[in-house]
Length: 510
Image 1 (tube, rainbow, N blue to C red):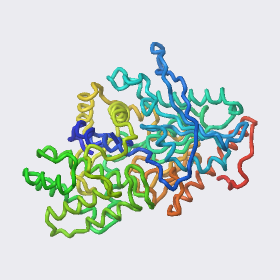
Image 2 (image 1 turned 120 degrees about the vertical axis):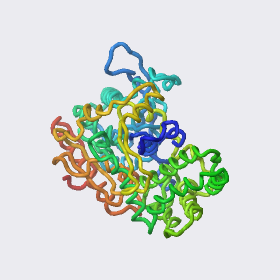
Image 3 (image 1 turned 45 degrees about the horizontal axis):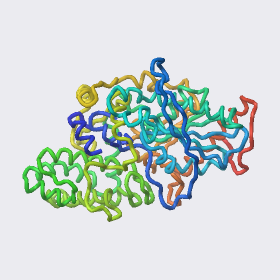
Image 4 (image 1 turned 30 degrees about the vertical axis):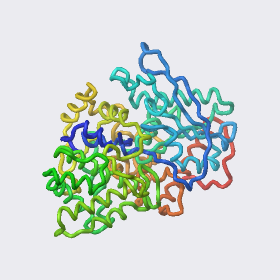
């Protein structure tokens, strides 16, 4: 995963792209594109090794006329797997290259030995190398028609069945689904739709309720604003004031030139309309910072310092008497913390706000079909320009770009919305700093549909590699998640009459 008035062309130009990673009313589309799980590997993390495999997957699981197949990529690490019947931790791939998620999901690698688990990272159809129609996969809507979450979940189910068939000793292995952001949504839905395939799921930072009429459309941006408000004096207030300052300065050709030079833009602003996309790019910058406000240096969407919002806010502590130019000088310095922390960027590229490992166009299409995530801003309870959510405007934009219209209520219909109490064995973890928690499950639904809150955590911090600077809340969250895994594994082994011995270092289960 902003506002109904911005065009999808503008969004695509500034992009999540998110993840990505990331919702959608028209602006929120871009935010989704950049807000998905992932990030490049932090250099202090231990080396990992895995096998890259491919499975002949059906293009269409739900019809019978399209009988073609494609090569679905998946990664396997089994050096800690205890045969026979050792558990399988299965990552439900997001909207991007699966190696990116594999390298970033350190939690799975760190618990594999203790659980005696095989790790499997499955790539989502239409992303990375898993292209149903090869180079033609994105050629038109007809070829994109099979890009749905339902088809992806069916891919995962069939792949697991195949693994259990071809891998000796895996027939009775209990499988736990794990995912973050959109991948976390998929992991929870996977357990709901295929309880015969997976015994439980960890859904980290999964906004399964960020759909029409489930949560207020403005909550996402309220959390972004709160992150900045608590990180420095006047920080959120000055960002709120900056939009008018940009409007004032960009009203002249000389002002546009000044902005371009002040922000070291690769492509100078030449027309007043360019200021609209420029503001959208800045808005996405602040959103992404909220998602990756980690307590240590990380190379997630961009290389960043520890607690990056605190660093950003050092440049935004002005009082109300500051001039527009002085204010925007501070905003430029703040933006450069995100885009040029390393000092290696010769200029700032307003056409991209996150890593290219995320699949922009694919998520764009998903947002315009079934992933309709309303978002809005009011400029009072948040630090952004006021923009209402308009489903009709959003639908019209999608129709103009793809020739399709979104189904506003489909996600709630097919996955249950807030009526999911009949399901079991799902952990919903959310960070208090993460704006996506606005659409997440943040309180227990039942004894086996549990919420784990991480007050000092940003976007799926619990899935990342452990770090000496991790706050106690995320350490406790990971320990609790591991206990639930152990409990589900024992329950599954008891029901099938199979078993194996987990590490003697394991702790008691809940």
